[in-house]
Length: 321
Image (tube, rainbow, N blue to C red; front, side):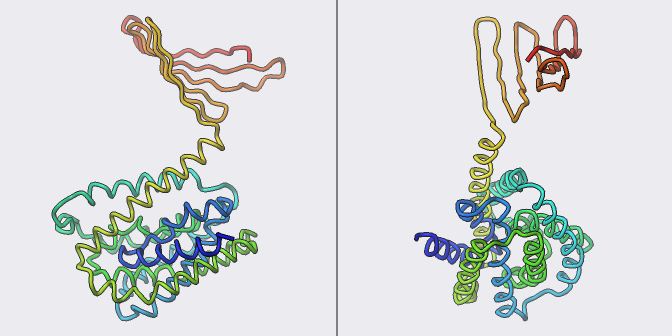
């Protein structure tokens, strides 16, 4: 059975890399765990492993924790995590994962920037930490990982690499423990989830032996660049995985037709059809979807017309399905 060694080795690598990038093991592991677990089970397995990882990092870097950050971050993170777990019990987080992947890809300009980017970062006001905690708690509860999403915020607080690792871990300990309890109460922790989560936790413990030696060898600027590189890599993986899932579950299709007088580009999503049609000098933006009718199946069609002769206007009609 390849599941055990594969999950362990990838998790060991992910937690080792996350130690020198400021976080992100969960975001790296999400695509892999999605191959073995249902989408709503992945956050539960991740939280088991990351809770153990956070406890280990707190004990390793206890003296580097910035408690003033923790005290502002945690209070709103916990109730927000409950809201995220509740949302997860209602729907899979596939669209959130897609948006987070695109957000992580925004680190690419920072990665490609030649000079040290820290000189251009504006300081972050500590007054924003409660809102940051609430956002982190909700996202973490909904998809199981926050990781690299708030890396830039920790840099803007003026934290050094050891302080980022330690303070992030302190922020995450209560959050992940609370989430594991909530996942259990909502019935999201099965025997398979516990097995995968245990493997991730074991890998997290194994990575602790290399954390301090690696951080001691890294300059802060290199630490930042590794963080941006990890964010971009996680973003690519999340966009590909979530995008593929959206295409399959919501029947997304793209189409294009053209002749001598008109061109049309269309997108179908679930039962909706969106199209852009250009004919001569007239542009039509069209949306159609099934319409409830007691007499016969019908399709509701709404069209926004942009015409050089008639101006801008809309039309609505029902067509027989």
